[in-house]
Length: 336
Ligand SMILES: NC(=O)C1=CN([C@@H]2O[C@H](COP(=O)(O)OP(=O)(O)OC[C@H]3O[C@@H](n4cnc5c(N)ncnc54)[C@H](O)[C@@H]3O)[C@@H](O)[C@H]2O)C=CC1
Ligand SMILES: O=C([O-])CC(=O)C(=O)O
Image (cartoon, rainbow, N blue to C red; front, side, top):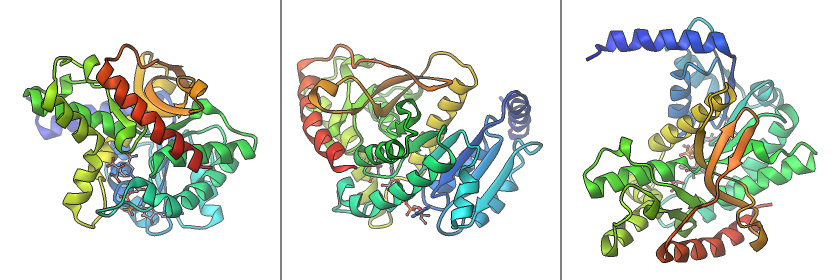
């Protein structure tokens, strides 16, 4: 058993060796928010991150000052909070490898993610313009909802500026995968660390399609299956209801976002076989006019390396996919 001190020391050793290998600037847009703060904290703990640029319309320098006192990777890492000016945003983005965007308003009880469109679409659009100008080659990770629409918005902005690279644009759907593994482990009484459930489609309600037949427990059926699938699809609502007007998932989302960023950095630093489900421009349902779809994606130094097909699914899951595609098409078309 490690003591806290021993664990920390080995963590710092890893930090040093990772940072001596590669320098990776990561930028968080919306860094002072419910997701932004814990996400920035987790990124500061990540030895692969050697520069952390925090931007928000309020409070980013304070968050940066606070986080910068954490003595991880302290030899090399720079943490900077930028004030909300054009110049501040440009500097936050300049030379960055990964841009995480959790800027925008969260849901309140009774709202759908789509109800956030009017406010968040313009926030994401403006930030995407800045990213296209100052970080055209970065990996862009969109967290702001509705993800099914905000990702196509970013794509259009990058296209309009002639810098769109579909391999570098990701809607972050990792929280659905995190929830699926947690919820299935609760049903089966297992360790969630050993449960890996593929979730495909999009990121809202019925567009979230967990493929339980491909999990360790393909025989879950009947009411147990219905309840499990429903809980994964509407896990976000569970948190919105419990927070009772104070927002939506922030801490679990920070963990899921940090995990995705870590996967991208691992892949960009040469690790092979890094696979994450994520919402990307995808060939899987293009013939049905659906340009973006989440499925398992292998990541590499150039971003998307390989998009896996959804694989063998049963009739129950085919019905879920059919329902998903109807809503997903509308969400994507609404975007740009
Ligand atoms: N993809 C996913 O799985 C999830 C997505 N979300 C979404 O993430 C978004 C953020 O959620 P929270 O952090 O809880 O909200 P929050 O309100 O706590 O934080 C949002 C932050 O964005 C900042 N902001 C607003 N406009 C900005 C701009 N133009 N530039 C830079 N920063 C700006 C705000 O000042 C605030 O600090 C919401 O849209 C929410 O629905 C939430 C959970 C999961
Ligand atoms: O439910 C929400 O509005 C936030 C979100 O996307 C999630 O928790 O999955």
